[in-house]
Length: 294
Image (cartoon, rainbow, N blue to C red; front, side, top):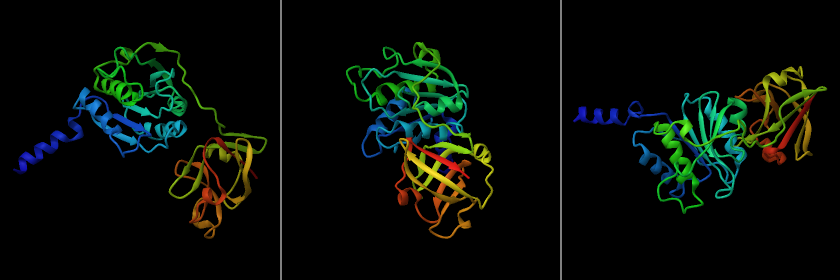
């Protein structure tokens, strides 16, 4: 009996899965059958695929956050991994359905609506192809116009991951460019650091920026220095104040603000055991930016 159980476990182990990993992301949530339907399509393509979830809790229609979550996860997955990302407020419109092959050897199956902003920048564009729905579409779904995540993206992604189609068989080749969401890149000029606030640390209310450690070092700040900080929304000042720079939260009293480098080595703002974002009404996204000076 024990030997049969062990054999069953071995057969179900990742080592028995064929093809490349298939990683799914969406804004569908898990309250209905949408995600299960996508997985069912993938299993129908190849029952031996290893299927994983990145997240299905992207805020609805939030293409910006979808782009961020992809780049946060992708570098930790092996070459050949196929990501299917479906945050698609323009479903059924003329936006292109594409597969991006990055220079790192990863594949991203998604509408070309800005979702590829950060993976294109970080991992580089090797090639882009438009999905040929005459070939790469779930059978008998031609009259379905509002669930391309199931009918086109999950189906094409599974076929690519399983090796049933090659990248070249996805569809026609496009120019090596994708739709990109404009935002404030991290810069240092004239004694001022400028950057974007891409995301909040939701659990704790810390405000994360895209200002990496190397850019911050150009300011010449040392732990204990008091820095002048402005947070802007669409170019208008949403908050400004003086904040001490330290390496750890315990360097300031409870309830006091701190500027620090987070676990990604990006400049961030926090309140020791409080929420900086809630206290000062700060959000995140392409419209939010930060300025720091001594």
